[in-house]
Amino acid sequence: MNVGFILFGFALIFAVLYDTFATIILPRSVDRDRRLTNYFYLAVGRLWRWVGKRLPYGSQGRTEWLGAFGPLSVILLVALWAVLLIVGFALVHFGAGTLKGADFFTTFYFSGTTFLTIGFGDMTSTTTLGRSLSIVEGGTGFGFLAIVLGYIPVLYQSFSRREHLVLLLDARAGSNPSAGEIWRRYSEAGALDDLCDFLKEWELWSAQQLETYLSYPIVAFYRSQHDDQSWVTAITCILDLCTLIQDCVVPVDPWSKKLRFQAANTFAMARHMIVDLAYILSIPPQSQPFDRLTPERKHTLERILRQSGVVMQEDVDWSFSKQRDLYEPYAIGLAKTMFCVLPDWTSYDEAQDHWQVTAWDNPHFRAGN
Image (cartoon, rainbow, N blue to C red; front, side, top):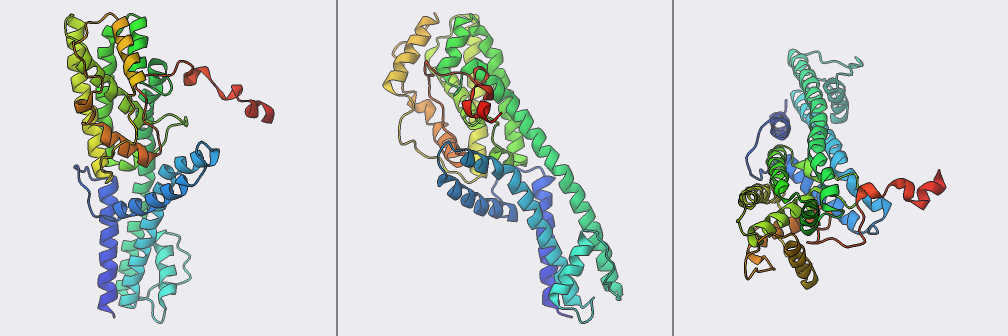
C-alpha cells in the first residue's frame, strides 16, 4: 500500500468535485477563486484569442472559430473534470493495491470503465476495499454525468434570455446600434416618453445578466447569431444613451423628469454588470486608441437633440468625459476580449438594419442554391 498515491488521489477527487460543485451549483459572490475552472479558461481563452487574432478579419473561419469557443469550452471542461476524476480514483486503486499485480495504466482503464459505468467485467477487485471503492466511484460517475447533462441546457437558456433583447434593439437602434439613432427614431415617432419603458427593460436585463454571469461567466463568451451583433455592443449603446439623457436633457416636462430618473437607474445597473463581469474574468479597464465621439458625431448628436424639441442644458460638455470614464474603460476591455467593436454614438446614413438584409440578398448564397 502506497499512502502517498492514496492521499494524492483523494485530494484530486475532492478538488475536482468541489470545482464542479462551485461552477455548476453553488451561487457565488463577485470573486476570482483560484480554482481549476478559472485556470482552465485563462489558458484556453488565451490560446483561442491568439489563434483568432491571426485569422483574417471578417472571414467566415474567424467567425466560426470565435463562435465555437463558448460551447466547445464547456465540453472540454467537462471532459477535463471526468479525466481527472478517473485519474484520482485510479491513484487510490493503485496505491491501495486493489488490483493485484496491475500496473497504473491497467488500473486507469479499470477506473475509467467503473466511473463511466460501462461495466465490461473483464477485471474486478477481489478486496473489500476495492469493491467498496468501485461502488463509490460508479455512484460518483453516475451523479457527475447527471449534473453535467443538466448544466448544458441551463447555459443555453441563459443565452436565449440574453439574446432576445439584443435582437429587439436592431429595429430601435440600427445596426450597429447607437445612442443617437435610438433618440432619433423615438423622436421622429413622437415616442420619447416611451424611452422610460425601454430603459426599464434594459435595467431589468442588466440585473438578470449580472446574476447569470456571477453563476455562469462562460455565457459571456457565447456569441450572437449575427457577426456584427454583441451584447457588449448593445449594453454600451444603452450606457451611451443614459449618459446622453442625463447630461443633456433638462427635466421640465413630467415625462422628461421620469426619463432622467430611469436613465440614472439603468446606467447604475448596467455599469454594475459590466464592471463586476470584467473583475470576474480578470479583464482590467483599458483605454481606447481613438475617441468614439468624434467632432462630427458631437455635431450630429447636438442636431438630433435640438430637432427633437426637448429642452437642453446650457453649455453641454459633448465629450461626456466624467460619465464615460465610469463605464467605457471596462466596455473596451470586454470588447477586446470578446472580439467585438464598440458602437458609434450616431449611425451612418447608408447603414441598413439586420431585418432589411437577409442571406437571400447575398449573391454567393444564390449562386450556391
